[in-house]
Image (cartoon, rainbow, N blue to C red; front, top):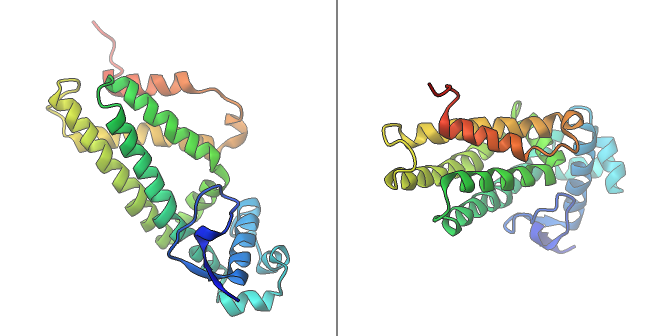
Length: 224
């Protein structure tokens, strides 16, 4: 059986998988089945027997390729975060900042926030799995922080520093403080939509996001 990279195979996440992870067809089938079972039932509730049934193999076959259920989870998600989700997220953010460098900061921040929200909604089942299991598996947490959070913040810091030089935003505040404030306000708001899907289903929240951006830029203190 030929080894094939994940990038040569379709997947249920809608994301292109990393090209440097070589898997046999059987290993791919196991991981693809595991993704379907994990996203439907959650990692803790899922069993290797269910994964085996979904993959069309025996449970013993799974354990010949992966020692534990955790090994399946990490073999599937860590490369996906490091080689696909991380670069895709950071590259799209960078391009958006560069392409719209002459637009007012408020408009750029709104575009960034809406694009991030679209990504979260398109991949919410996968992201719900990642965010839930990152609480228990440091390998996932480190991948998210290192490949997504830190690198995205670096791009936003450059954006804020550029706009400080143009006089659009206060220069007496460190750029990294401003970025962490914006990042925290917007990301926590959006993640609530991913984790609380029933409450947020079908909700058009563009105006709410715009209010958050206005709060970030102008503060909440009433003008005297």
